[in-house]
Length: 321
Image 1: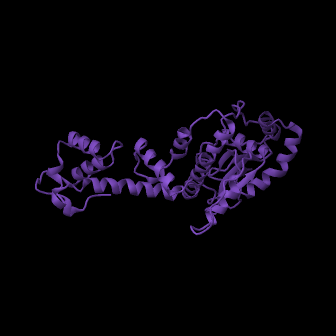
Image 2: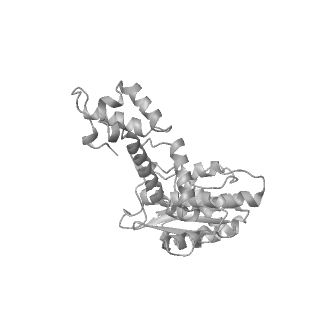
Image 3: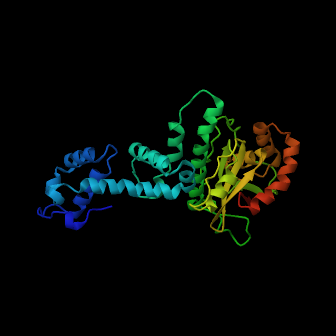
């Protein structure tokens, strides 16, 4: 948001429009508010308010109006990124957390995509710890919902599989695989990942570049779908009862899909995301899953042979011949 040129005094011809813009953004976007921003702008550019802006009604500065409008625009961006969370919390409480987040994490990027990246973690850190599992679990629901909505936004923007080769089996190997997004704090550290194998004739499997994973304590999928299809006139959605689950988000033809996984399937995708190269050793992959899930390696190997082609159809994994 930039000032109306009618409000800008051009009396000092040596002050360029670029300087005015830089001064103005410094003044209205300061994390500690308008007055702190005004002081910072004056110190940084050696220009005071009266030299740049014309006084408004009754000689009062209009700068606080611009500062308030700037924060409201950023709040609207968070509303667009977290519509289901806003519906679950209610607008008043959601806006409270937005204001606190923007005060502690002011916008530092030219892209608004980056603005809400830290919002789920901010909510997680803001939750009180009561020491009682049931109460702490209650506070975990909006946090998990925020992580889910951020994952959805990231999948929309992440490199995808829309540019597959005509064989349908390969993708651009230079595309970086995004980091795992997971809520699991007790997930075991991965065993040293080595995808090398003598099975050179077997296909290799990689996680899709647009894949995001979530391990959650609530059944978020049904709630999320219901909230996305609800209208403001709909009845309030009830928070579901706790139930551990595993979710994957990926994209097919620019459409984001949310999948509910079994625990062992989650660990398969997790292992593939951590691997530095396509994995073609099914026994090795089954061993990684067995370490994390407690399943027998033999049973997991048989399940992998059947499930990986299905996962490829859902754009969760990519097969490399």
